[in-house]
Length: 209
Image 1 (cartoon, rainbow, N blue to C red):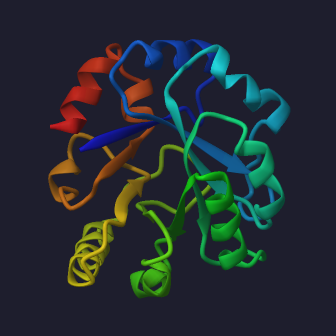
Image 2 (image 1 turned 180 degrees about the vertical axis):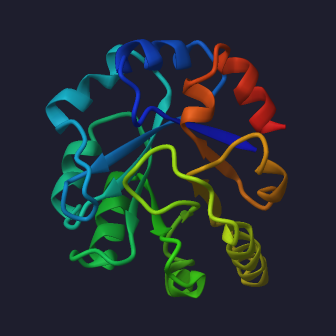
């Protein structure tokens, strides 16, 4: 199991990233919000682009924006593992997928709690990752939605049936109490469970196991 640590909601971002860099966490989860797709708005790219000053970890970028196509060229300049977009955006998903491919970057699609997991099936052979949202996107610290594991398990069966290598990631409300239900995932995204702890590495190790 790989772990992607989110710093959304952290007040001392530089210190948080520096401390995470000292752990064996696999990725840093970067939430990008435009104030339109979701109410919240995150730091502009001009500030986020300095993230390399604090960590060498690869970035797991989650676009919660209505029109992400214009942002790909910017974020492709960073140490990015994957760029993930939502199903119900205004830009054409196939254009986004192709643009990411042009840069050799992995591409993912996020599925919200209110959306049926089958909506992503038509893209499974075109993308590298499906991000299943365990909370409604936009706000940190929400309670994990109970039927999320069912969606994940259904998605796993579909991926295996098609003999694909598409990764499954889950984001939102992931903690030490619910990880036993998330064993069909490849990547766990966790924010406050890690960053509110006194020992980042200890929590990361427990999440991974």
